Image 1: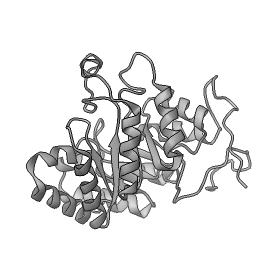
Image 2: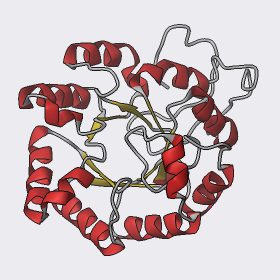
Image 3: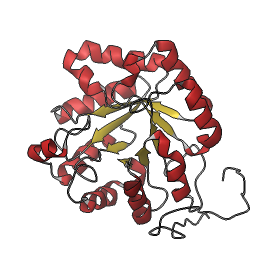
Length: 273
């Protein structure tokens, strides 16, 4: 366990970095703009609990190359991987050559992971598998993002999403299995249609995903404290979660059992052999 202040006070066991489960991936600059100086402060204080950083919404495409490289180097210095986010669905509109250049530049900038999101587009399964192969051939990790909600992403209004309808969870699981067999490293599960922009949470969907794919192979988007608390309360502190960077401490306090709400106070435990 990472040495911290007050380490004599027991807490729930947590695996050390580099972790295979209990991953915390945080949002990079998007809803709030920040650069290497802010990130340095974050990682200096709570870097032990950050496993990955994801640039959302193609935010890196609005920054100078030196700024992106600086952020990525800083992350690597703290054993934190860097992911592109799902911007490839925008790039795909411009053809295979642009996709190849996108992957090449991502690698040159120091990215470790290419997220392959299809929330806004319709992409055949064979195309998804070819993209995974391209990413892996470039020496990067592939992280498809899958969900049950048509049109997910970009803070689309709940009424618009409801009109689009949802997919069956069996389809998502079948896609995930094909992607993992093709070399995908982990599957990001889109929250919309499950715990975001819904009248009632689809906890049945989460249960089927975990039961059939396993905790290690999936990461859930849960950037609402009530959502990530529910995941930890129901699936333990080693569930992989994606949250906003402002929520790192709140999430880790819950994972380690040192704080919580009335619902979780004193209930989060983990036995380390």
